[in-house]
Structure formats: structure tokens, C-alpha cells
Amino acid sequence: MDLILEGIKKAFLLLFTLDREVLDITILSLKVSGLATIISIFIGVSTGTMIALNEFPGKRIVVSLVNTGMGLPPVVVGLFVTIFLWRSGPFGFLGILYTPLAIIIAQSIIATPIVMGITVAAMQQLPRKLRLQILALGATRLQMVWTLIKEARLSLLAAVMAGFGGVISEIGASIMVGGNIKGYSRVLTTATVMETSRGNFDVAIALSIILLLLAYFINLILTHIQQKERQR
Amino acid sequence: MKKITHTLITVIALVFLSSVLVVPAVYAQQKNIILATTTSTQDSGLLDVLIPIFEKKTGYFVKTIAVGSGQAMAMGQKGEADVLLVHSPAAEKKFIEDGYGINRQLIMHNDFIVVGSPADPAKIKGIKATTEVFKKIATTGSLFLSRGDNSGTHAKEKTIWKAAAVKYEGEKWYQQTGLGMGQTLNVASEKKAYTLADRGTYLALKKNLDLNILAEGDAILLNIYHVIEANPAKFPKVNAPGGKAFAGFMVSKEAQEIIKTFGVDKFGSPLFFPDAGKKVEDLGK
Image (cartoon, rainbow over all chains, first blue to last red; front, side, top):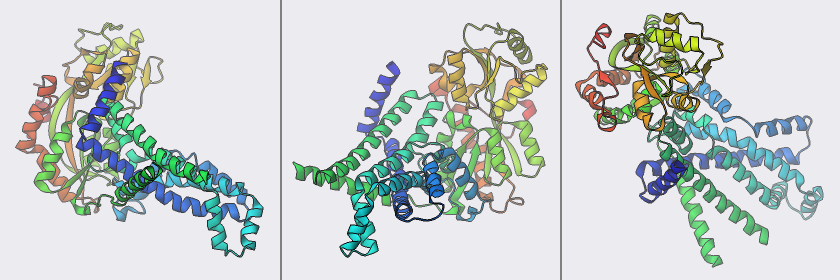
């Protein structure tokens, strides 16, 4: 119990003294996971909408593949991204293994199926008649899709939160493709693991608390946007 | 009130977005050195002291990938690392023979120790020969935790079991954690088990552990670190000048001095003993 109190104390100490290293790690986590989430929104929402609104043979197989992808283990993603980015691998010439960019790529792969899966469910939940109605009012197909996305925004924001939550808390991929390099590719989760193995439990607890606060803060913003839309 | 929250949210969103868009620039390729090393050099904090000095001196950017010695050498075998800092001598010799690395140089040593709960159920304290210690643990069936991760420590442990001629694989008292040294020590402390550890990591974690040193000082327990450069003839893509510069720095007088005093202020005794230029046979004398 003393340890937890000590950790909480340390967390506030590190936060309020704006410890340079902890600050950098926190900002990097935010950047990397934020960017990965944004990429996954672009791919996930567009592809998810396309899957939901079109009927094609094998649709159920595709949807179940996407849904399986929602549970994609980060270590598996990490392993494959590492192998692809190795100097001896197919994308080795890019030289981006053990960089923040590599983490962004891996986290995008993790978040995309999450966003896509929830998008498919959200779009399919909209009444079919709505589409006909919008089209009957003279909207182009693109306008129709945009209106539907706005209609499903409540669930879509939930998709964004799930995607972000999935990657900000992920460790397996970050440590494999990022390498946990001090001052360069060290994020909150990998730093927590390292401090734990170093026996600095107070720092590890402090980092965990910062991670939780960060996740809460981002979700607070998203929830605020989500619930505000609801009132109208 | 509503307006204020609205502005606040917008500001926060803008700050978030702008921070997201500025991703640290990817460093120029030839300025990067990938150093594959064992967890003990990182967990003890030694590299956090040495690497910034090296970087400042040379302008290189070192990417330290801290894994077990086994994995570090596996990376080396694929040409994914430019320089290795490892402690698994038998495997290192084979690594050089197979042409994966060049210029293997002695850097430093410390020693392994056998730790266990202060109660010492197998009564190993006071036994000098480590092989006898291991035999005693086996015959009393006391729980022993192995790293089980092909690290240098794991390799050493297997060597000792072999020397003691004890069957350990598949035995009920023998468990593998598959974790790093620090975490294995934590598990051993919780389970009141015996384990083999490097002294540096043990000293660094001692304050949180309910483990005592029960056997030490035997010649077989020597823990020797070498630096190995990747072989550019075999892997044209490696950063050979960078690897060479790092190896050169590690044997330099400046680095050796730091190694000599590292940990003294915190633990009262050094964690590593610098050995550049010495011969392996002379160590521990």
C-alpha cells in the first residue's frame, strides 16, 4: 500500500515539476497514438461505410474478418511489422525500424479494424429507408454517404474512442518495432515496463497514472463532443 | 459558461492536433547505430550514462535495443544490428566463427550469484563450488527459477547444470519464467525460489527483494561482456563505421573510467569491472 501512495506522490511530483523526460515521453505517446488513430479513422470509417452500404458476395466473410481483426493481438502485429521493416525484409530499404514512425504504422494496423468494425455496425444500424429518403430529396450518392456518417456520429465517436484506447494502452507492438529507445521511441507503456524491470516501482506507478490521466482526458474531450451533438 | 467550455475544448483540440502533426524527424540513416545488447546493461542504468557521452562526442545516434544476449545475437545474424554488447562467450565465439561479426573485444566483467530466500531451504549457504550448490538444490527439490530466454544468464545457468551433471529439464522444481533478469528476481522473491542472477541487476533491485546472496565467488560464475562489430563483408547494409566507433569508445580510457566508478555512489560498490585490453584468462584473479 505504501508503494501505491509513494507512486501517486511521485506521479504528481513528476507532473508538477514538468520533468523533461516524462513530459517528452507523454507527448510522444500522444503524438504516436493520436496520429495512428487519425489514420485508422480515415481508412476505417471509409472502408467500413463502403462495406456496410454495399451488398456483395462474401460480405459476411469480410465482416467477420474485420470483427476478428478487432481483437488483433498487438504482439502479432509487432512481429510482422518488424519482419517487414528489417534491413533484410521487403521494406528494409526505408530504414524506419526502431523509429516513432514504425510505431505509428503498427498502431494504425491495430486500430483500423477496431474503427472499421464499429463503423460497419453503426452504419448497418441506420434504417434502410433513410437512404432512399435522402436520395429522393435529390442528394448525390456522396452527399447521401456524408449525411449517413453524420447520422451515425454517436457510434462513430465511440469507434474513435475504442481505437485510441486500443493503441495508447498497447505495448507489444511498440516495444518490438520502436525498441524503447531513450528520448526517441520510448512511450508511456514501454517506459512503464522498463521501470518495472528496473525495480523502480514508484516511477512505474507514476507513469501508469499519467497514462490513465491522459486516456481520461482524451476521452473526456471526445465524450464532450459526442454528448453535445446529442442534445440538438 | 457554455461558450467558455466551447473555447476551451477548441483550444485543447488544436493543441492536440498540432502536437500530433509534428512527428520527430527521422534521423539521417548513416548517423544511426543499432546497438543490440543484453537487458542487464540497460536495467543497471550503465548505458544511460555512457551513450549520451558517445553521442555528444561523435554525433552518432545510438538506438539501443535491450534484449537477451541470445536475441541480440539472433539480430546480429540477420545483419539487423551494427554492434553488439553481450555476455554469452561460448555463443559469441561461434558467432565470430560463422562470420557474422568481427573484432570481438573484452569490455568488462562482473559476476553471477546464486540468490534465494534468507530461509535457504536447500542449505546451500557456505558451499563453495557452484556445481555442488546446484546439485543440492536439485536433490532437495527446492524451487529454482530459470530465465529460460536464451539470455547470457540462461546460457551460464545451463553450463552450470551441465557441469553439475544434474537432470533439470522437465523436473517439477525447475521452472522457467521467460522474463528478463529484473522480473525473474521479483518472481523468485515472491515464490521464495533460488535463481541465478548477475550481480549488477541484483544490486540495483535489492531494496525491493527478499533475496540474499547465497553463493558467490566461484570461477565458473564470472560474467564477461564483449563488444562485437557486425561483419560488413557479410552484411553490406550495416553501419560499419558507426559500429567501429562505438566499439572503440567502449574500450577507450574515458568509457572504462566511467564503468569503473559506475554504481559506487548508489550501491557502495561498482556494478562492473573494466577490462579493456586484458585477457579473459586473467579475469577474477
